[in-house]
Length: 192
Image (cartoon, rainbow, N blue to C red; front, side, top):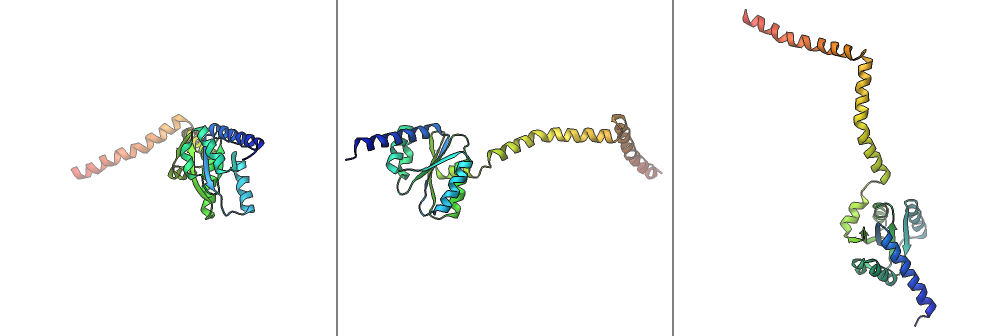
């Protein structure tokens, strides 16, 4: 039977892990079997750079933390080697990094995950992994907002380049006038 101090340490680990699960917006559970130290170091560095917390955990401790956090549906995948990646700020970062890593490493497998406190299937995790980064999404939104303004600016610059609004109207009238006269001339020879 474990000593009282060991039990207290395990309870503290479960409590901290449970709080981490509750406070995160997304999490991905993986089997990290068969990766070398160099690859693991690169993976952890990339996760850290994207504000994703990654740790190897014992299945029994994670199972108890899942119970406390209301994520009991994760328990069936808690076997073998297990690591969990959680994010407090970005939904797709953990899924994107870990799914891309799993493509290149046969023994590294995404087991399950959760999103906003609800366990999701692997298809949802895969779809989440294909989302662009937050910066790319923001750039796309800003581009969409700027497109009409940029088009308006180009039109206004064209008006200025033509000599002003009156000059543009005169040019437009001159372009439309021959087009209207051409059909009238075509009808006149037919009438003769």
